[in-house]
Picture (tube, rainbow, N blue to C red):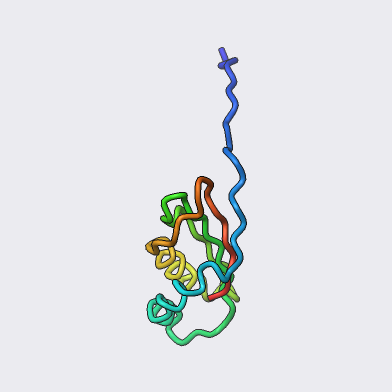
Length: 99
């Protein structure tokens, strides 16, 4: 028959919201990498990153200005995931900024 067992998934505590200024220095440092990804394609790439207590970027998503720039957004997301940020403390952090 069908399984009748259920369980709860603990989503943990909500991440701390960081203002974009918290990552401004790191963004300036990776501007060359971002330029390589953009390949001269201008536009606003809205990025959301989740930072673990260790400072490691656990995940990053980038919304491109248009569907044609999806490849650029993927490149930027990969670059962000390789960045080490300062620790947000005991809880993870969420930050949204533009590239």
